[in-house]
Length: 192
Image (cartoon, rainbow, N blue to C red; front, side, top):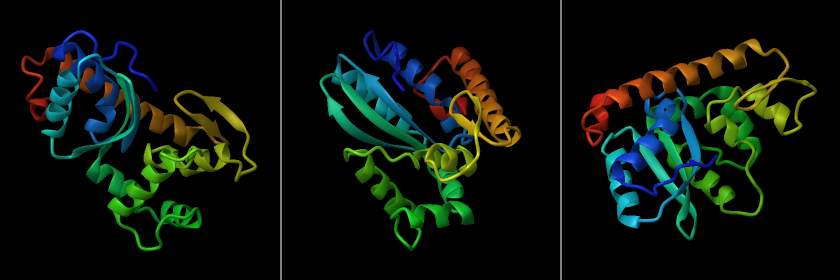
Protein backbone atom coordinates (compact mmCIF):
# COMPACT_ATOMS: atom_id res chain seq x y z
CA UNK A 1 0.00 0.00 0.00
CA UNK A 2 1.32 3.42 -0.87
CA UNK A 3 1.24 6.49 1.32
CA UNK A 4 -0.24 8.80 -1.29
CA UNK A 5 1.02 12.06 0.09
CA UNK A 6 4.53 10.78 0.52
CA UNK A 7 7.24 12.61 2.39
CA UNK A 8 7.31 15.52 0.00
CA UNK A 9 6.55 18.57 2.08
CA UNK A 10 8.21 18.69 5.47
CA UNK A 11 8.93 16.52 8.47
CA UNK A 12 5.62 17.21 10.23
CA UNK A 13 3.53 16.27 7.19
CA UNK A 14 5.65 13.24 6.47
CA UNK A 15 5.59 11.82 9.99
CA UNK A 16 1.86 12.42 10.38
CA UNK A 17 1.17 10.66 7.08
CA UNK A 18 3.23 7.63 8.06
CA UNK A 19 1.88 7.45 11.60
CA UNK A 20 -1.74 7.67 10.47
CA UNK A 21 -1.16 4.69 8.20
CA UNK A 22 0.54 2.53 10.83
CA UNK A 23 -1.46 3.58 13.90
CA UNK A 24 -3.01 0.16 14.48
CA UNK A 25 0.48 -1.35 14.47
CA UNK A 26 1.85 1.27 16.85
CA UNK A 27 -1.08 0.50 19.17
CA UNK A 28 -0.13 -3.19 19.05
CA UNK A 29 -3.50 -4.20 17.59
CA UNK A 30 -2.17 -5.00 14.11
CA UNK A 31 1.16 -6.86 14.35
CA UNK A 32 2.72 -5.49 11.14
CA UNK A 33 2.23 -3.26 8.10
CA UNK A 34 4.01 -3.20 4.75
CA UNK A 35 4.11 0.29 3.25
CA UNK A 36 5.62 2.02 0.26
CA UNK A 37 6.97 5.39 1.31
CA UNK A 38 7.88 8.09 -1.16
CA UNK A 39 10.18 10.90 -0.15
CA UNK A 40 12.06 13.72 -1.83
CA UNK A 41 14.45 14.38 1.01
CA UNK A 42 16.40 11.60 2.69
CA UNK A 43 17.01 13.80 5.76
CA UNK A 44 13.27 14.03 6.35
CA UNK A 45 12.96 10.24 6.02
CA UNK A 46 15.87 9.75 8.46
CA UNK A 47 14.18 12.03 10.99
CA UNK A 48 10.88 10.17 10.54
CA UNK A 49 12.64 6.85 11.15
CA UNK A 50 14.29 8.16 14.31
CA UNK A 51 10.97 9.44 15.61
CA UNK A 52 9.17 6.16 14.96
CA UNK A 53 11.98 4.03 16.37
CA UNK A 54 12.04 6.11 19.57
CA UNK A 55 9.01 4.05 20.58
CA UNK A 56 10.81 0.87 21.59
CA UNK A 57 8.04 -1.58 20.60
CA UNK A 58 8.06 -0.46 16.96
CA UNK A 59 10.69 -1.82 14.62
CA UNK A 60 11.10 -1.46 10.89
CA UNK A 61 12.88 -3.21 8.07
CA UNK A 62 13.62 -1.25 4.91
CA UNK A 63 13.20 -3.27 1.73
CA UNK A 64 13.46 -2.77 -2.02
CA UNK A 65 14.66 0.80 -2.26
CA UNK A 66 14.11 2.65 -5.52
CA UNK A 67 14.61 6.30 -6.40
CA UNK A 68 12.79 8.34 -3.75
CA UNK A 69 10.79 5.31 -2.59
CA UNK A 70 11.25 2.56 -0.04
CA UNK A 71 9.18 -0.41 0.89
CA UNK A 72 9.13 -0.67 4.68
CA UNK A 73 7.89 -3.40 6.97
CA UNK A 74 6.78 -1.83 10.26
CA UNK A 75 6.04 -4.17 13.14
CA UNK A 76 5.11 -4.11 16.80
CA UNK A 77 7.57 -6.53 18.32
CA UNK A 78 5.42 -7.95 21.14
CA UNK A 79 2.22 -8.14 19.06
CA UNK A 80 3.98 -9.87 16.17
CA UNK A 81 5.71 -12.33 18.49
CA UNK A 82 2.36 -13.18 20.08
CA UNK A 83 0.73 -13.62 16.64
CA UNK A 84 3.45 -15.92 15.32
CA UNK A 85 3.56 -18.07 18.47
CA UNK A 86 0.02 -19.36 17.89
CA UNK A 87 0.25 -23.14 17.41
CA UNK A 88 -1.72 -23.26 14.15
CA UNK A 89 0.27 -20.33 12.73
CA UNK A 90 3.61 -21.93 13.63
CA UNK A 91 2.54 -25.23 12.10
CA UNK A 92 1.49 -23.51 8.88
CA UNK A 93 4.64 -21.40 8.56
CA UNK A 94 6.94 -24.35 9.28
CA UNK A 95 5.23 -26.28 6.47
CA UNK A 96 6.09 -23.35 4.20
CA UNK A 97 9.80 -23.34 4.87
CA UNK A 98 10.08 -21.21 7.98
CA UNK A 99 12.61 -22.47 10.56
CA UNK A 100 11.48 -25.43 12.65
CA UNK A 101 12.57 -23.70 15.84
CA UNK A 102 10.62 -20.48 16.35
CA UNK A 103 12.51 -17.25 16.85
CA UNK A 104 11.01 -13.88 15.85
CA UNK A 105 14.22 -12.69 14.22
CA UNK A 106 14.69 -15.84 12.16
CA UNK A 107 11.05 -15.73 11.01
CA UNK A 108 11.40 -12.07 10.02
CA UNK A 109 14.67 -12.84 8.21
CA UNK A 110 12.91 -15.60 6.27
CA UNK A 111 10.00 -13.32 5.40
CA UNK A 112 12.35 -10.54 4.28
CA UNK A 113 14.26 -12.97 2.08
CA UNK A 114 10.95 -13.95 0.47
CA UNK A 115 9.90 -10.30 0.09
CA UNK A 116 13.14 -9.55 -1.72
CA UNK A 117 12.66 -12.50 -4.07
CA UNK A 118 10.56 -12.57 -7.21
CA UNK A 119 7.77 -14.55 -5.53
CA UNK A 120 5.53 -12.57 -3.17
CA UNK A 121 5.01 -14.34 0.18
CA UNK A 122 1.23 -14.44 0.52
CA UNK A 123 1.63 -15.84 4.03
CA UNK A 124 2.50 -12.27 4.99
CA UNK A 125 -1.18 -11.87 5.85
CA UNK A 126 -0.45 -13.84 9.02
CA UNK A 127 2.18 -11.25 9.98
CA UNK A 128 -0.46 -8.54 9.40
CA UNK A 129 -2.81 -10.25 11.85
CA UNK A 130 -5.30 -11.56 9.31
CA UNK A 131 -7.11 -14.73 10.42
CA UNK A 132 -5.35 -17.91 9.28
CA UNK A 133 -8.52 -19.14 7.51
CA UNK A 134 -8.40 -16.06 5.25
CA UNK A 135 -4.71 -16.50 4.46
CA UNK A 136 -5.33 -20.18 3.68
CA UNK A 137 -8.26 -19.25 1.47
CA UNK A 138 -6.29 -16.59 -0.38
CA UNK A 139 -3.42 -18.99 -0.97
CA UNK A 140 -5.81 -21.64 -2.33
CA UNK A 141 -5.35 -24.08 0.58
CA UNK A 142 -9.01 -24.03 1.56
CA UNK A 143 -12.34 -24.76 -0.07
CA UNK A 144 -13.88 -21.75 1.62
CA UNK A 145 -15.40 -19.17 -0.73
CA UNK A 146 -14.84 -15.42 -0.59
CA UNK A 147 -17.68 -13.99 1.48
CA UNK A 148 -16.48 -10.42 1.94
CA UNK A 149 -13.69 -8.10 0.95
CA UNK A 150 -12.44 -5.10 2.84
CA UNK A 151 -8.79 -4.67 3.89
CA UNK A 152 -8.28 -8.29 2.81
CA UNK A 153 -10.36 -11.04 1.24
CA UNK A 154 -12.47 -12.86 3.79
CA UNK A 155 -13.19 -16.56 3.29
CA UNK A 156 -16.03 -18.55 4.86
CA UNK A 157 -17.60 -17.28 8.09
CA UNK A 158 -16.95 -13.57 8.07
CA UNK A 159 -17.75 -12.81 11.72
CA UNK A 160 -14.22 -13.41 13.11
CA UNK A 161 -12.60 -11.56 10.21
CA UNK A 162 -14.94 -8.57 10.42
CA UNK A 163 -14.31 -8.37 14.16
CA UNK A 164 -10.56 -8.29 13.49
CA UNK A 165 -11.06 -5.61 10.82
CA UNK A 166 -13.13 -3.57 13.28
CA UNK A 167 -10.34 -3.85 15.88
CA UNK A 168 -7.85 -2.50 13.31
CA UNK A 169 -10.18 0.38 12.35
CA UNK A 170 -10.89 1.32 15.95
CA UNK A 171 -7.18 1.37 16.80
CA UNK A 172 -6.40 3.52 13.75
CA UNK A 173 -9.23 5.94 14.56
CA UNK A 174 -8.17 6.23 18.20
CA UNK A 175 -4.52 6.71 17.29
CA UNK A 176 -5.30 9.24 14.55
CA UNK A 177 -7.38 11.36 16.93
CA UNK A 178 -4.49 11.37 19.39
CA UNK A 179 -2.03 12.30 16.64
CA UNK A 180 -4.25 15.17 15.50
CA UNK A 181 -4.18 16.59 19.05
CA UNK A 182 -0.46 16.01 19.64
CA UNK A 183 1.68 19.09 20.00
CA UNK A 184 5.03 17.32 19.80
CA UNK A 185 4.92 14.44 17.34
CA UNK A 186 8.52 13.57 18.25
CA UNK A 187 7.19 12.32 21.60
CA UNK A 188 5.34 9.48 19.89
CA UNK A 189 5.37 7.29 22.96
CA UNK A 190 3.23 9.92 24.77
CA UNK A 191 0.57 9.55 22.07
CA UNK A 192 0.33 5.79 22.54
